[in-house]
Image 1 (cartoon, one colour):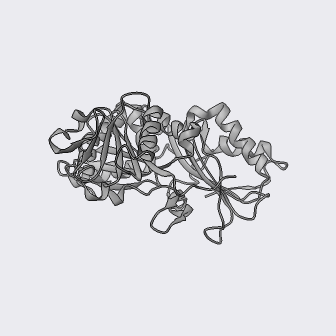
Image 2: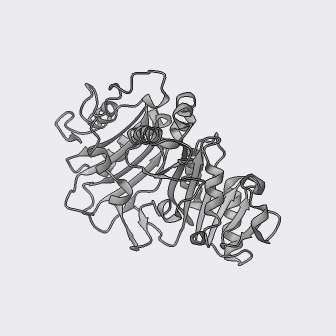
Image 3: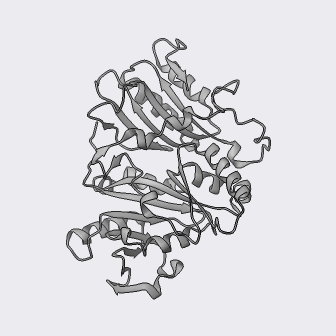
Length: 363
């Protein structure tokens, strides 16, 4: 087990479909004083319209904003860009930064970026994932999600969702969109923005480590209670999250394929059984596992172990110093595509010594 390196640099990924207001949001963020000492990785300077706000050209690929934010174009592979910035920071060749923000293209699946942070040895030791921020157009997001699975996936894996262009939509449309987003991703914090205006503090520090308390805040990060409060739990004949209720009748809706649920394990299981279960899931159904977060009570440890995965990849498990509360059950949040709770639980039961003995509890 590992410990979270609190000195590693937090990385946030901003994603969102084409035209959803992602560029406007980023443009406003980089002007905010709270974004000082932030490095922003973008594709081209011109795309976010910062040319008229430049204070200093550090070099052809890097500019320094009046807010103190450092903007860098991704001229090569993302890994190489992140390595180069870190090394140049250490050598004091560029201004210091203590946070990184990566903007994806409008059609991008954020998963490969998350994989990068989980798999490259150099990056793993120096950066840590803070969270995924997704934008959703108040006017067009409902239709976009009907037509494009990428838009659904961007919202499903997000830790923070920004409903943009709220000044152009009526309350009913905004409310309907937010309800759909909550059903798709119950644990994500949803915020509204007009003209991209939003306080950065609402979007960042979404990871396991809370810089304000200088501690690991698993409850804030996991938000398992968001699934407990979901009225659709325990309604399905085969799993605890029935997506065939009244407002989900269109089988062509992309988000009908997405399920979000929390699995509770009442028993303390050996780590090798839990690890085998997760390995089995990711080996055979990794493409359908959009994100996993969990806190585990394993037999080998008196304190909990935190896990975090995206599709086939997992961060190294993190050992906590203590339980966050009196509830010592294992709690694992899944966001999946065409992978129901029943399949996930049955795979675990098959690996335990007493399958079907009630070790698993549905929230």
